[in-house]
Image (cartoon, rainbow over all chains, first blue to last red; front, side, top):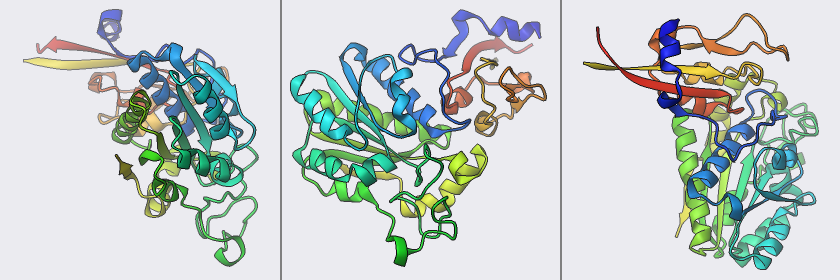
Length: 254
Length: 77
């Protein structure tokens, strides 16, 4: 054991929590993808040295309390209205780095109009979109992004296309809008995917500095409590079922 | 020949025992403890410390950022 004590010394440190993340214990369920994405955003902000210049817009949903975890300036939007608020903040402070952090219930359901028009106007913001195909915060109800046949609290026999319509693949719609410059879909289920996702988020934030228009990063995520699976099993389920519908990769890069 | 040796330090009270680090580790170093922390979670620990190479994969996937990673280049005996 003395061997390990020799290794655990300050000069040998290769990875630790970024200072942009606060010391608060996150309220998310064990294994929730939100924690990983929060960390990636925080790390990108630290690496770019823009902590003083970043303004986040937190949504309604599980990540409503994101302002407790990232040590930057925040605004809290009404449900789905984060892109509208981000527009206002960005126009009042064009030199700041403004990003919204939204879930699928927020962005793809009640906030569809706001996100579409913000992206169409090409507001100079970053949108981080967490898509776990369910309303996690309120107890696992069906969302617009819920997959066909997927069981949720409000679709106990599985989503029926005739009754509930098709899963809304909103990122493909947004990629068609001329205002967006960078649209990508990522995931955070493996170390390699996390590294790739971080690069995408970094690129999105760099686009703000270059005034390129809206950058949209979807992160296909898990909701292990809503899906009633363990965190490890959720990741496997996501790869098997979510990826065929929500294919990871860059949709647009101009 | 230099050999890389690593070690991790887990913030036991903050760990929620999700087990994502266990499957992310390429050298099967980490396991969940039989004991629980103050919140009742089986926290992650180094079950096989000699195999650790300090790659930081566990820390990268940790949703609660509770893992610190250390690495040294040790001379082979």
